[in-house]
Length: 147
Length: 147
Length: 83
Length: 83
Image (tube, each protein chain N blue to C red):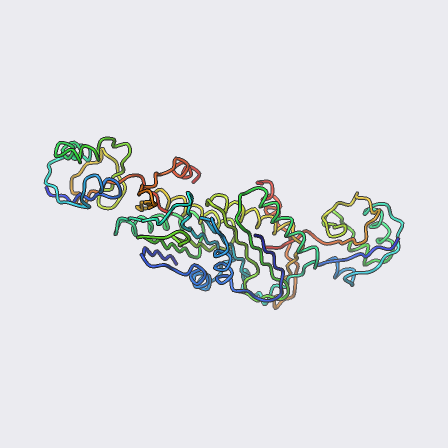
């Protein structure tokens, strides 16, 4: 009913979406979110994602449990990569399924908002000029007040 | 940049998501929604979807144009089936892509809300006991006031 | 003038056909509806409660007070249930 | 008591190691931070502004006033940037 994967390997978002959807008996609505490394400045060589093994999995599981307590989901999926990712690479994906669209959308947004600020991942940008840790955005912390 | 398909044939949501995502240069966020025929009463044999050829395509194109005017999307995809669909079949999908997650989520929800009430499709339920047209829900009309 | 009138979903089922050419001098959608209702019981039944209906003129959503001048295609149908 | 102290992201880089065992009698996270700051400049630099830091006790987010009794693993890191 809920699946959480933290991995260095790439994943096939389309195949994951199909596999997830097929397992959702009774769901009329499936929502997916895929996050992709963007080359904002035009000079990004890679994004390095550090995480906290052990805590990462349990923190995501807690967030997923919270989403299932708030919305009537038939299932939820979270995949999040770590390690070195190049521009265009998929960083993570979330999928949610419910009888109705509003629950599926809201749960997916909730998962994304909490993964941004409450799952122990840190992003470092590698450019030709050097490296720098991505700062947390006030707007990401503020997004949590919606829930 | 925007693709609208109205078809009787089934589609592969995962393959469509991957094809869509690969075409979105500069997008950091891709959101998809898939609608599936639910057997609510336990006796549904099929859902028959009637539409208005010609107007369907132009109405959806207008809705997609409106979403692109409201959010900075790199692309949008709408696929909607018509004809006889059995429980578990995918009815339709929407995908949106943008630099940031909030725009991609909001645009996908906007497209869904408008497709529900402003695209000329009508659903008829076929059960062992007979057939009946699905009534429009007040909540679906009310959802449009959000935008 | 001659207009193509289209019916969808239960409007189509009640009237018993998906489209027909109609000769009319009606100035508005409402006037056309009144003309159709006098034709036969099945039209009167389909148009008994126009608040349960929607209308599109030349494939764009419109309303029952809209003028028909220049319109070639008129469609009547219940509220849409896509998605 | 001996606790495992973990550092992530720029905290790890400033201190120069990802984890270490620390012998301490500190009653709270804040007391442990004060002890660490007296060790060497790199610790003082990493902990100069604790409002820029987050702390997890036994892999659960906590705060700097939390007691350390019974805690085996303490992690310091900047605000998270997942997703």
